[in-house]
Image 1 (cartoon, helix red, strand yellow):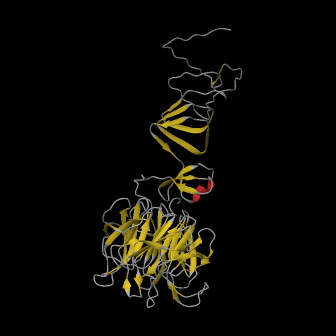
Image 2: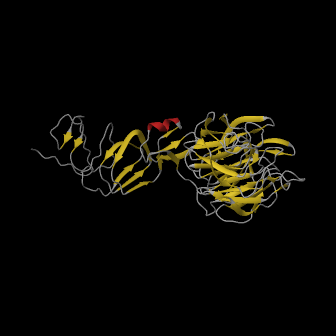
Length: 460
């Protein structure tokens, strides 16, 4: 057989498309058996870069715009320079020690509904509805954390409220650390002097919505950075002016529930916590009373209790659905938050429609429900003091939690007739009575609160 040797500086062109190097199969299009060394190699069509099974290649370097459909082999390191597109049917099967991207890497994108088509544990995607990077755990979709823990987690805010005497409406925001004990410390001021607000938070940002002021009912939404101190900043507006509603959240979406306009409203609004703008309509509150529901959430589900217990799926929109009953048939039960699996609320001035209580009472009951299963609420303990008004049938105080401890703050006490600055705390996975935590800066009622580490954080 003749030998052809081509030196440096020469050009070698194969005219036929059906040419094989080192193969007898004339139908192959440039099939090369062995190593390929090329300066500007361009593979057009369906190509396979194969490695010998059981051997570890030191490095595979891919430059410029690479569209990977499939790759099988074992590589020590993959370095990709330029943009990389991985299609929905792509697979890269390799025990890679290290993957380095020197420019950008694009994950699959889609809305919330489209994620049901990919449920392999470890799958990642960009959610266009929420503007978040998410991954599948094998049980649920969770948001990739994008915050830096500065060591201040466990902070709860106390917002505004009303004094017994003029000036009635309060502008101040104070804070406590839920896992310690002590008095509240000044944080900053709201954008105005408001009572009857509804507050929620994720790991980074606290949201204060709605309110009552000397100038009338508000639809304002304000925000603060939880780890710092400072004044609230305008966020946007609710779909309605209202007060005495409720709120809850997961890491990405906040939900504002019901209230008065001054007549009662069953509207549920939502907002993306880490963006700015006006709230959007989520749906309507179904069977729970619309004024000051007791709320709590898991990363995927929010519950609201007030005579009946309803739930919504946080990542979707729609009307709430009944799935349980509270022990009492009154209204305005402040939420104590959630462990992630158990939602908890307390107090009230209410009737005995769904409980062993035999008369209308101002109850100190601490009670809750399993967020996933529903049913009739279970009583876990009692507040340290009774707070509520027989005239207005409200508890007038606020509650929040981290994942283990709930706190209830302020309120109105009828005997003796006064507002109070009490803070109670309760270990949510236990039973018994709440204990004294410390005092608020003022004796105030019709207040609201939120925490940066409650059980609903995570998920979308």
